[in-house]
Image (cartoon, rainbow, N blue to C red):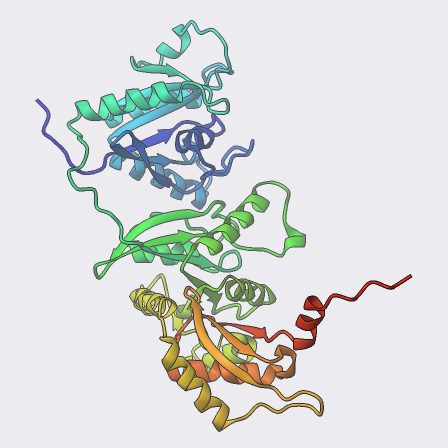
Length: 463
């Protein structure tokens, strides 16, 4: 008799490269979470996502293709296999995926042997069965009695698979959790930078485990990986992204998809962490990525990675001045010097993220902010031209995340850009808005002449 388990179970997808694991993962989720491309080895890191079948919930994990490291000292292959082993250990049920269009390979047989030794419960899924009849003799030779036919690309057999998964998990004692822990809007942090800036290493250091594959080879991370993380009673979603390259240098395959997913992650996050490699310095690409963060209105942290490898002659104060000369438009963003190897200042990034998210959600009452506007204008009146005198009538906050203000004036063009920057700086001096862009919307007063022209109807000419 099984004991009742209230935690959320996990189900892992395993199989040799290019059997359609990521396509099946997306078909179950009914959305495109994993990169699908006909290139073996596309999936490197583990992707995890909750799946709801009625009121039953489990976590589905997409893992890289099962390939044992060869005799060649390939660090990526070793790290990948380590990820696979850890994923199998944590799984409550394994979906073993094979390609129904091809004969069983030596890799399939090796994967089956590995799963039998693991002692995990397994469902054999024969994928790419696009409307074909099935005898089953060859695939039953793998030794797994629970077998199901599916076509992930045509989404056939998915409902039967989900029904079998839930049945298996219920037999193991899993039930619908009495109280599913509802995340109260977890803070989403995206880690961005050029390839090999140390994004995956940072996330691994935060989690305290080798959750993501790390290598000195640029471009190891190919997909956007989201990992749940709790710190000081605050829930986070850590989003590790592929290194962003110059648009003109992108390949048409995996790399192009990876960069697009990284940009999507930036759009979805609350706080963006720009990782600047201390051994390389600020590159043109870092400036481009920082500009994207500002445009998206995200909270921003500049994390100088690999600080343990920086020259001893360079001090933190000197490096901050260096950053200020290259990233002038991020003067409101905090700078943190980090080392994933030494786990230096890892938690400080999360302390800052909590603070910045609160700043992004800050609201200022209209009477209070209008009193502020009058003080600013009295302290420094905007200069005008011979024909136009700039006048500001009203200021109100019209949005958050990022803080957005609308100022009503007689003519936005009458205000010099330096005065607009002055007003933004005064807003920061008065109310903080630490680590977040501020958006100022300048709205002009429509000229009375235009209104009159709309109202006056010209009389018709008499013949």
